[in-house]
Image (cartoon, rainbow, N blue to C red; front, top):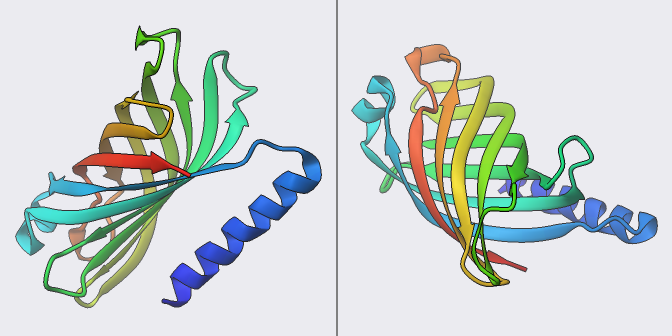
Length: 169
């Protein structure tokens, strides 16, 4: 709960900063599931519940037709108190891929940190993510993401396929 409070406070601070600086900060919530791809993570559980928060930072400035955002992902083992937290800085690459006027297809790439809280293992490691997404409407979207990380204590990695449906606030 303490971590969630810290995240909410950081998001509120970013929102305040964006209104003061006229930055186009946006928020989105995601929910879905994760399929473990790492043998140690699979030994704990094959299927994990997954939720996420995206904080959009507007146009990338690094790449044309791209947007930057910060993602926070939470993977939870059902019925247990095992958790994986992933915090990444990401880019969405649109590149003109559309299926019609309201729908856009995009690629995702990100780099950051992952935290394991599984049994007695409590460790932080470097993590990355890559995937593909589609905006179904102005507010609803879906994503398929591959999470990868370095090996942490206990041999755990975040290696997993995540499938999300999201809502832009």
